[in-house]
Length: 501
Image 1 (cartoon, one colour):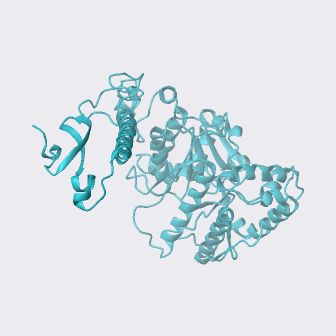
Image 2 (tube, rainbow, N blue to C red):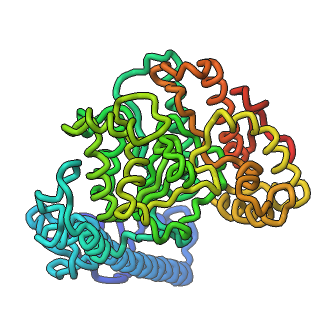
Image 3 (tube, helix red, strand yellow):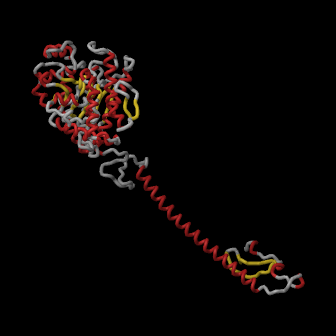
């Protein structure tokens, strides 16, 4: 049935049938009054042939335009449809790469293709090896705690590293991977400024680790309830070795020790044949038999089976051992200058070097060519004089004082170290002289007890706290320089922008 819009009213004349559509004829019609007005209508009778021809041309042009616009629209619609299909497919592929169906949690995936199997990766990024019996973490006999030795640890570590090639044993600059470990007590400090000081000591360690690509673990709980005070470090280092098989060295630092040369790099190559590095002097240990011939507050220990066995032996003289009381008496008998009776970790270490030398000593390096452990009393008063020497060297070599991004700090530190070897104000063939000319690597506030405040009676508490402020600000200036600031002086917490480099 034709639509009513195709019907021509009686008063209209059909001029021409242009085309026939789906709904009937498309017609052009006009009122007869408009078509012609003859004499009877008050007009002149003129033929309309020319007007009709023009009208037909207009209508045909309009039709052609509509057909053209329809074609353009259809083409655009087709392009949009093709783009939409491609976008939908790429979106689904992307989602397939990012997500795994919850119905198949154990399904392996590779390259985002459903149903394909990767070589050894499962959906959550865990190696298949992690589930296997070959993984020592699945062996309950491999313990984190003191008193349960691990047999064949070196091979276990090697196997773990072989199965995890993405975890590098060395850093990007070829240095061994290191984990710094430190800690403090789990309750608030009794000393009113103790918590503030410990926070600053921690910040100091974090700064150095960030600059040198070293991981850090800070602990404040006892892993062995009977091994308190200075003995608490042994079970912590032992657990860290198992938790971090990728770390070649574990670096223990007491909470009251500050790193005061942010540029210095530990000479790891020097210790390639050793498993334990402590600061001290051979003659004080082996000749004088002094319990202060070395310091156990900072040490480097290789992550290996030898170290695990050594810590088992070392801890046998600790408070969790039935030999604790008798060990204290034995240590006082063997060590010439020991004035207290309780067994301590440092005296026990010296004792093992003396009495079990054949078993342990050839793997223990006693370092004194730099301050791995600088005694604070002889160090904190030298900072200004040392700073003057560094500034003089930088004045002669402006490149050393050039502004740079913090990420470039190691490169500038290496350049500074090179110039120091050629600078008469620093270099000396005498190690004891050389070590005093450069920034002390570590300043250790032995005997100050910042948390409890129960400092050694040979020191004044005020000297301890003031010395800590000086050491921490001295180190902080080396870090803040990368940010364009420095302290007014090393006894002030106020900083100012550096006006010129």
